[in-house]
Image (cartoon, rainbow, N blue to C red; front, side, top):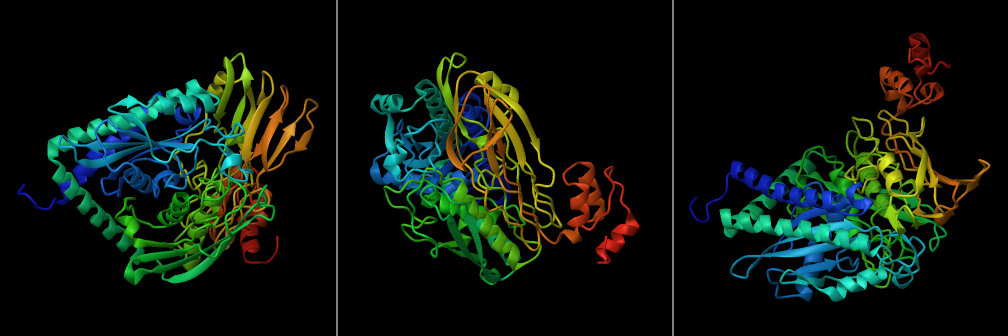
Length: 588
């Protein structure tokens, strides 16, 4: 190709897949070598590529709340604090005040520097930690008054390697503060190793096709992605609307947290505008969003609502304009505000509200609300036992459901929550019982817990587990106990969450929604996650689908009749005459 000649569609597609495969290699490395269960079982990590001018280029199969926004801002902080980047450098970043999501997400930034010393790209590997030095053994400190009470070690783009050699001062600091230092060291090697593999592969690709050609690809790919996004928005309904949601009361937010989202779609301009400024100030708790999570949650609601497959990168993001303000619970936090739980609870309320706003503007668009988290079944367990050879800390992912219903399809029941978008796996019971002193007494979906509608919300999950050796501490921050995930366009809300401790006599004792619950040996913790919201009027659901739902035990005979107007036997056989009469409004 002549110098400066544009790449054609085939060349663009090939280079995109080459780059995507590099991020996939990074992810595969992290999955197979991470030591924590939160990494090698649950896959709570992300690997992406950012350009030298800090534009998000490729996210592969990352968790959206990790990377839609933030990776670019973290790379900006790296360049601000370290203007002269050299090959062999690596930086540890987890500061929510400088582009990080929340302190539990240790992120490793590796600049790709060519043979002439020019910074070309940055490899980003983000890995959720089992322990990050919090004052309590959990990475979700919902009741933290501020970052000092939270206790996490904060690294604003700190150099962790020079000339490929570790900065042992930082390593020793982590080992002294983190409760499971050997486990952290294994995760450190896994995440940094993933970023180094990305660096190696990008250096090889640059040598093969030329750095100027890769820069040209990035520019064209951004423009192409923006064109696709513009085209998708032009097919969306025009209008402006406001949606509301409410997070449950928590320590430091005793009245709950109201979330207000204003969304305007301007199809003729190919633009979506979202305003979050009319929301409460930051609160003395860990539920405040970092800027990265605020913006990522907005983008999640939008990308979940468009009907075409649009690449998620800096190009497509040009078609979304956001209005945030400083010192806002869903805006831009100021140090020392705690953002310990920024990736989940309130972020979910924002993303779900954006999707519901789009649904309100036009049938066939948007989504209902996905289930709220974090119930005890995906809490952080800790304790000490002979089985683990001493202290253990790890987040488990034993049970969550509650996907949101879409305009044409029922919910993805095991999505987890809007922020992970199905990217995190659910744990094997056998592996958790093998690794930790615990027994899982039961896990199953709950009949009638998904929101009713033309399309059904995802069902909630019951899970019960407890320690087999000594006491176990379970840290969780469960939203949705009081305010259920909302349905849309006439769809029903999902079921609320709840949590109990079951004692030796089998009696249940109510637990708080935000707690570090001590579960004695022989006792269990009983977790109910939220169901997801439904989409559209239940009477619009096809009767044969309702009968199938009864046969599969997603819904009961009573709900089939009372909500859907379908008279059906327990075996799923429809009484057509009674159904026609009921749906016509002539009684049951």
